[in-house]
Image 1: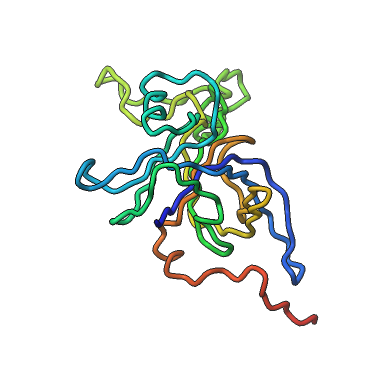
Image 2 (image 1 turned 45 degrees about the vertical axis):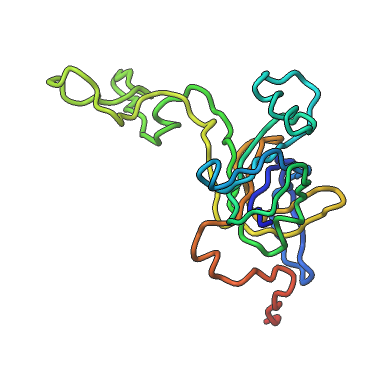
Length: 228
């Protein structure tokens, strides 16, 4: 069974060192085991995938979701997500998927999460526009500029206006797995990932062709340059 993605929660950022003293800024992700809840096949569903449950819970779930867990005789989970698998799939319902079953140190991954929400913002912060003049009483310091021609009697789509900023689904591609701690269920990723602390993240094998074709990164075997 080849599963190329797993879900976790962001813990925060810290730093670690390689064996030759190189400092690496890393993001710590806690990955609790996921459970296979359903196996989808080409003959029955039109594609091959496994449905995984993340974070077992005792809270009341919608009847449609709770009934799905009762059918397969599995404890209810708070979140469900799907991962495509190559056919034929040998996955069985109830199989536990751990972080070490999906990821390895040096592997390149894509991380998908929800970015931090910034609320209602203006065009200067959201769209990086410049402010107006502050001299001669213009009173046009941080306002929106021209909205275009008056002839269409409407505003064209795509016009930069004040609105919500952040809380978007963002994917960061090509990050490197620095270290895996199966005992503490922790994963260290090189660099930053979207979202605040405790944000749910989907970590999958990268889709970047250049990162896939490149050999695994040797983080702990770098050659230290000779002192000058």
